[in-house]
Amino acid sequence: QVQLVESGGGSVQAGGSLRLSCVVSGFISNNHCMGWFRQAPGKEREGVAVIGPDGSTTYADSVKGRFTISKDSAKNTLYLAMNSLEAEDTGMYYCAADRSTYSSSRYCSRSEYQYISWGQGTQVTVSS
Image (cartoon, rainbow, N blue to C red):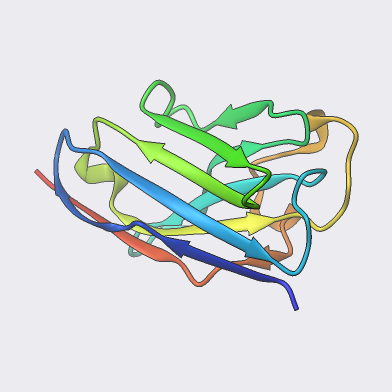
């Protein structure tokens, strides 16, 4: 059974930092596209950052230079380091996995429709 379990969310002041973790079980994520998505109240879910099989990354323009996605293959864990947080970063953050395998990261998009396995989400609240 595939499971993705996020942790690390919380409430911080603007300018602060958080590090989200997503532990994956039930499959080995090395050759898959993995990503972090977020959904703010009243807004559609958006792709924040994705990482591909070769470690290449793609970010939403709104988080470039502030967020870093990474993975630890030995721990089968995905991370999202978030710095210089802004009130606009508030939302529920989800990690997701595309169960197809790829040889290249060019197939990894930030579209939620590519990703089939999802975690339950972790709340991030940034106060200004």
